[in-house]
Picture 1 (cartoon, rainbow, N blue to C red):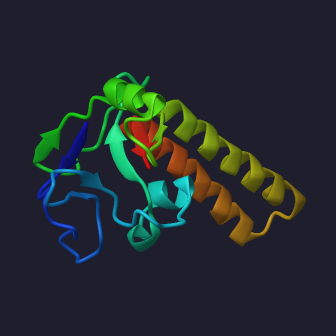
Picture 2: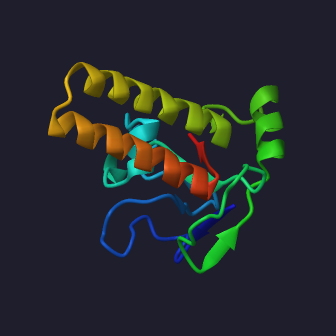
Length: 146
């Protein structure tokens, strides 16, 4: 499921790029060729470089998604995955909520090691930011489509 206030607009209310439906009805990320990471996407503020589209996995454990818009579309990720597997849809990947959490946990682990080795305020801030990222992704049951 994805929520938005204007699915057809390629920019949000601040003028930043966002996922949207193109003229053919395809859901397109803010930057299909972007090199942004899962962590930078979840953290936000770098939409010009994100190749991901956020969605909520309704089956994700412990999720109570924040509402990101008044309108909603359902994405049949099971069907999409079958179409990816069969080759019908190419250049697309689904990153499950579990995979998103695993990636973000690895960032917490790295930040914790860095902080333990050098407990500076900057390293503490990095660790806290990484913890916020996984909290938000878990709350939202966030999965990503690339």
